[in-house]
Image 1: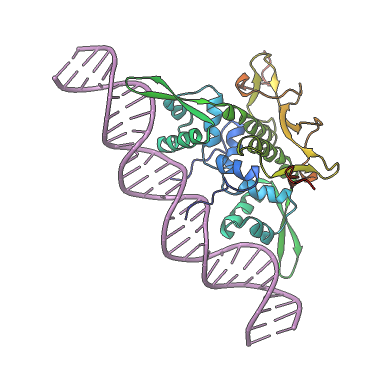
Image 2: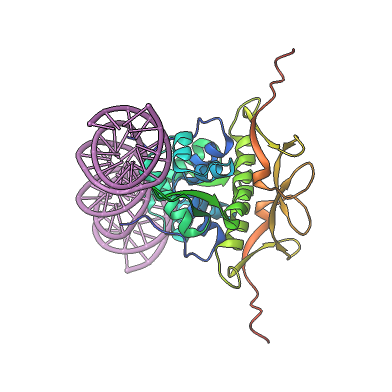
Length: 153
Length: 153
DNA sequence: CTCCCTGAGTTCATCTATCGAACTACATAG
DNA sequence: CTATGTAGTTCGATAGATGAACTCAGGGAG
């Protein structure tokens, strides 16, 4: 009676759910973006159970969001760094940030904001359509089978 | 020894994680956007254990993403509809969709695309900064305490 | 009236995942 | 020899997920 896996379902949301549905995983990624690299850094920052953290690292390395990099030979020690795939995952965290900011606080919103290190300005993530630049509206969209380019009529 | 809760942490990502970290929850929301409303519709579409589905509905109603609407008096029956807060959650699913499409398939990408019902065109969700319209880059951003407007110097 | 069906759950036994705390392994510092 | 730092693993207890069966209400067929 294993927890149902979604990682082979034919839907990108389902497969991503399989990852972010692991408790702590988005927070581990958040800390990676905050510049943390070592086991103890993550553990102290989040106070996540060490056994869980070890399992999350294993999976995230396995899935290719993090890579294990040796930083010392004796004793052998490794740190965890974002891969391109991991860096791209920022968009998911940003969308979560925005929705959480907008809907999970009363009154004045959350006590924290996102700031661009270069400009010093606040950043507000927004999800748009790449082609039109227009904000998305969920109920106007539907999931559709991709027109197979491989079948000439 | 309850699973650690994140819903009171002072970070929007943490609070959102507390929701999407419940197994099945993003899929339940996906089905809601696909137009499903009734218990049995969700259950048949996802093959989610009924006990889990009931608990997810309870929580999503509780958190205000869905509302329970009576559609029949005898016997009393209810359906579940998206609230504004629930509709806004689409952005998170869209970001998950995009990342999953880009990174969780080999070769030709997933067998499904997102289509706009009005225009019939494919939609590709993208996360940008609301002010500049520019794509985000995670490691350039940092989380910062909000400058409190309430303390005049 | 009795049997069967639908819809929306609840109950149950089993198994898995997470929890906190303690423990291990390896190396260096004093 | 003991203490400290880093990266884990092990362990017993408990919360959460699973599939199947069961409940409860009303409707329709015979």
